[in-house]
Image (cartoon, rainbow, N blue to C red; front, side):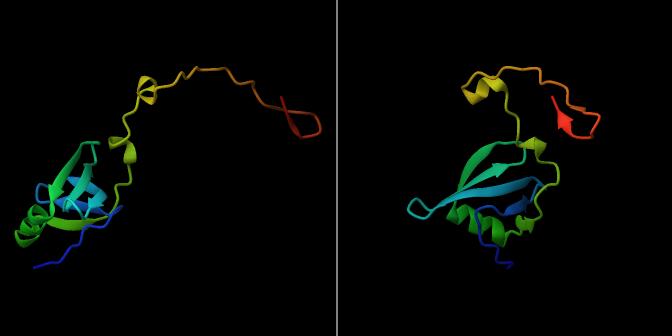
Length: 100
């Protein structure tokens, strides 16, 4: 059996090839909170983790290069007002320094 301990911040690959990250471990409840690449968060108990290890269904993986799967946030989701403001165009002065 390949012993793979859950480590917060570590990425893993499930038996269905889905990437997920361990985001929290609750020793008191004996649960592991995981977040899939698409942003879905779920819990798995220690027993289920160990059962999946025995079946070879969990293996360590590298973090994905493209993190956009888990980042699907709209301005409304941030609970604050965000305005698009026009920034002034930067230009170079004749002496080569930057100025507005």
